[in-house]
Image (cartoon, rainbow, N blue to C red; front, side, top):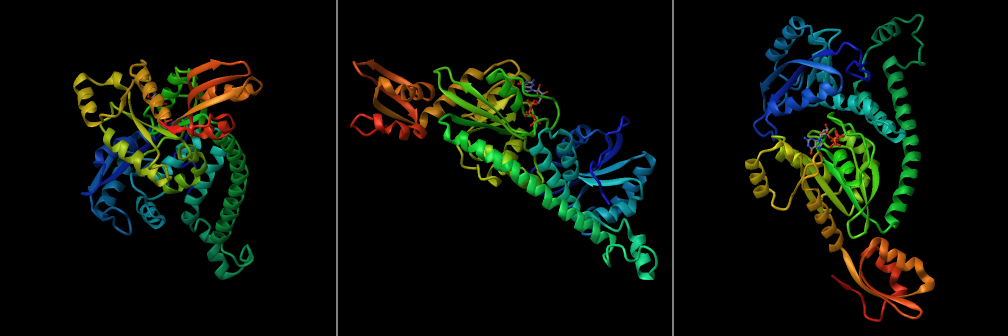
Length: 435
Ligand SMILES: Nc1nc2c(ncn2[C@@H]2O[C@H](COP(=O)(O)OP(=O)(O)OP(=O)(O)O)[C@@H](O)[C@H]2O)c(=O)[nH]1
């Protein structure tokens, strides 16, 4: 029966063999995808020592790769003292079993999804994060449970002690039942935690602050950018999926306007669907944002593919049409030629370095413009006794005219449309106009 973690985190790293297939219609060339798998394996604590690839347009139903490749892998496993074979694509439970049989115990066969689930398990910090990962892990495990207790099943056919275990259920059925009930209990716990998040999120929705979410490929520098913008110290590491739990920080634009910035879990190509599903509450921070900063690593040769993968996940979570700014980070690592190319290919993108601060002012200006684009101009007369209303305008809007009369202040300001309704009692007779 497979168990988490799949990759041992003991002092001595497990020796891993990476397996990828080359498809004609693949977006990522197999080598690029295996480079990424290598980083994932290292993040999970393994030591990749070799790679095997095969050109294959359709996976073989029994073993995913062809029988000749399976034999080659068996030879390498024994020659190179491999502990774990990691496939870059998802394996069905039966393919996994057949491959394990072919390679022989105690070598483990795992796939990309299991590896990512392992890393998520290592990096989840909050209760919600841990529950989300647990749910995805258990759902992955359920169809993969198999006859670990088959000796008991055999006993059953012969009768004798143990034959009545589980009142006629095989151990496999007992295991499945236990996992199902664990899934139900994790779901219940998660619902409780999510309810609390919804309340907090509702409070944020009620807040007039403009909401910006940082979304992007894993390791693109989202946390570093949040730190650079807000002067905070969110964990930023040269590791894949260092951040799992969303962090929200307030940020004041140069004109004084308040906004919130949320850093979220990174995306990756072939992101396991179960994880997107399990993390849907966390990802709601992205879905509900007014603006998404799509952060990508400008120095990565897979930049274009990374951005494609990010768009795919954003579509999947229902944030595909949210206004966005493409932020190409790490420009301190690229030369002028590449810079020119990127400016040509992504004319609307912000080129920045979270490390050196280059381009950050222009990014802030682009965010200000996006926030202002959804403003309304209001002409208000607010009695001095209603100071909370003028404070609202000053905090979340941009004051253009302010005149102090005998009993009231007259203000013309650009304010987020979300607070325009709250200011309705103070509007001058003329209806407010869109910018
Ligand atoms: N050279 C350079 N390195 C950067 C820059 N921004 C971030 N980094 C490095 O890139 C690595 C990843 O940065 P993070 O901020 O943790 O990236 P992330 O997107 O939050 O990563 P995940 O948590 O995996 O989603 C760290 O080692 C950072 O120091 C930059 O502008 N230039």
